[in-house]
Each structure stands twice: as C-alpha cells, then as structure tokens.
Image 1 (cartoon, rainbow, N blue to C red):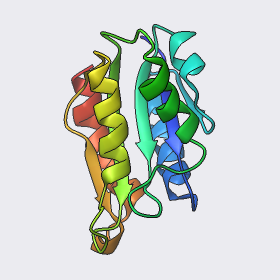
Image 2: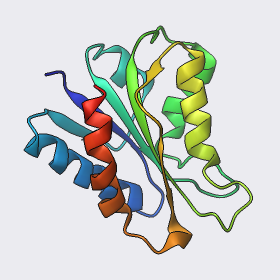
Image 3: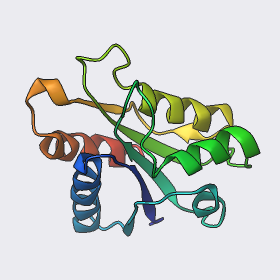
Length: 148
C-alpha cells in the first residue's frame, strides 16, 4: 500500500490532534502513515507515490496557519507538477466566523488547480458544533480509505 502523508496546518493544536488520531487509525488498518507538521512543496514532490491527507485549521479571517503557509505559497507561486496526485482534506473551522472553513477550501482549490485529484468529499469540522473532531474524523476515514 502507498504511504499516506498527513500534511498539518495547526494554530492551536486541534488539527495536530486530529492528524495524530488519523495516523493511528490508518496504521491500525494496514497503511503506512506519517504526520508532517511543517509541510513544504518538496515534501510532495520528493515523495510522488504518497497519498496526501491535508488536515488544516483556519486562523484569523479564514487564513491558513503559519506552519502550512509555505506549502500553500509554494503551490500557488511555483506551480509544481502534481497532476494526478491523490489527496484528501480535513478542514477544521468555526462557523461563527463569516470565513468558516476558507483555509481548507483555499488549499483544496490550489491542489485541484494544479491537477491533483481529491479523493472523496472534504471533512469539514465545525468547532461550534460541540462534536469531538477526532471522533468525527474516525467516522469519516473508513469512507475515505475505501475510495483509495
């Protein structure tokens, strides 16, 4: 099975916890998985067989957290050849803001504009829901992995 690289954008740590839970689930189900808390374009281009799982929160007015901004800027400025790369998105936001889930949508759009292929629908987690984001992720992953 191909390796799944989880690219994390986190400001307060919730996306990191979700990514760690996703990694545990994936490994328990026979996948090799790695969490990358400081993703850059080279992490994608140097590992062309990896399936990518982008797990990012939103900050400010729908902005990407600082640790994933180098990846986003590299995608939108350098236009790496990632056509055909498979990826999924876990998008953490807060619906009390008008820019709810914008960061995840922005990176999803950047990936698709470069020809990457999203697997399944993004998981959008709302901090206002009161639901456990890790539990919702564990409920979403079986459907996502079945589409691999």
